[in-house]
View 1 (cartoon, protein in one colour):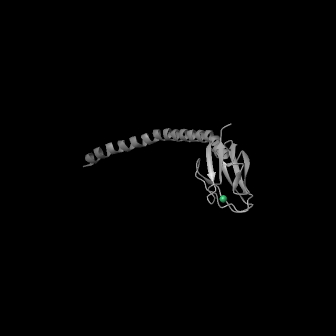
View 2 (spheres, rainbow, N blue to C red):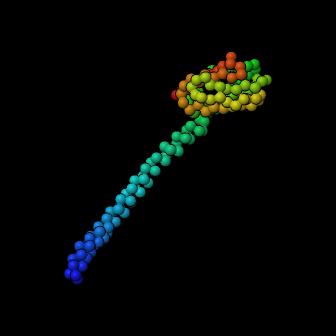
View 3 (tube, rainbow, N blue to C red):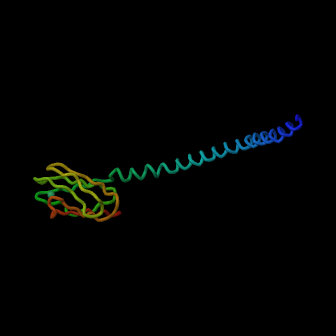
Length: 149
Ligand SMILES: [Cu+2]
């Protein structure tokens, strides 16, 4: 009986000792891996930050603003303009009746109703031809040509 329990405890004790040894040797390797991963993540963040902040800034801040008059009577003036990407165009209603700006091509945009002496803007970030009209007076047409310099 005592002999039997000794042989029983022997292998088990040996197994526990091996697991502990394994954990002891594995722990530093695991810590090194975590440090290495953290180091990689840190490097990735620091290199991607300039591009991440640069791109939204380029699209959200107009490099220039160009004015178009919604002029008397029922017309956009100038009717056709050419701008560079990053330009905001502001339409100001100098007519005696409300109008709006609705794109027919280039992008999906319809302004609010632009009352007399009020204005609306759109920031053109991509090159292309943007034909537009007034929804209430579809014979009022204009065009913004966005071309890379
Ligand atoms: Cu109109």
